[in-house]
Image 1: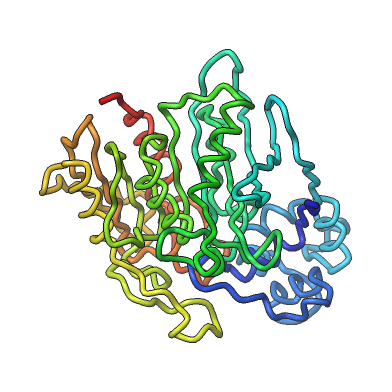
Image 2: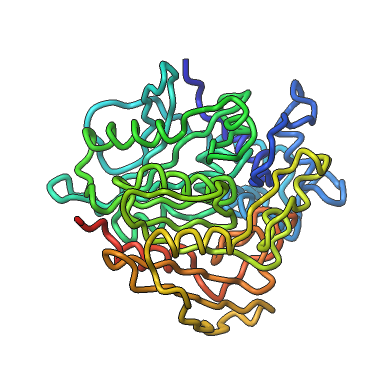
Length: 393
């Protein structure tokens, strides 16, 4: 039986920033204790029993959740104010069936006799009489769909651009947190237990086609870290259903890709990413995780060159330095391998000194490194997706 989504769990997950594609282990902070108290204590850096604006601003999820929490207007958020605000924002979504309408929905599908779930956000511009594009958004390892919503801001982009955004749940030892996807050779629980996440995507797309008027030629995928790895895997395994992908901060984790038809790729990655290193390797992982438990990431170049070859693109890219709008010590270079089969292309958005982050969004934790504000990953990927619907051979 599905449990109600617990906002407190999301907050703890966001605060500890477990979005790295690593073998998952349970969060060890007093699992039977008060998760609200744990989250408050982690944010309360100086231990004075109240949260200052500076302490709140360290975590993007807190900035959003605690707006209006300071009831007595003393400039600080006490634990009582914190608790009242978080609990009042508790959201309950029950599984829905039938046709989808504007808003947020929880859906359930069966894969190998296992119940699997996904969240779907239907934008305000949705018209059931018109085929609508779909973006699959895979959360990072150790996260869940709710943390992906906070991290990426894709619901807002969905409402602005008019596409449906879908957030699949990974799998793990617990129902709503510590979840991973099996992206071929990674990661964590999903890989160890050989979970069929390609089957999940296929099943949810079948379900979505019955529930909404979707454009089958404009189904796209994105994700961060383990979610990026998963987007690469579905591009290879379900190329007949995926038109283009936009991995963020995670490489392809198979030796080769074997799409049946071209799938355009726009990959975002920081050269200063210490968790999924640009040039490959183990990375530093989450605190307390031994090096031997961290995955051996493949390089960004491995990902790019495999898809350049698979799509039949030019062997040499065009290179463009994008405007340095934010002057944040990071520069962005766009490399494009064009003229692929059926008009496909492969693009790399290389962020000098960028971390394990979503470009254009404030990081949810300092451990992830820095995010550039020179670009918006959401804007760039949507422009890319619009240029690359699936084309018939």
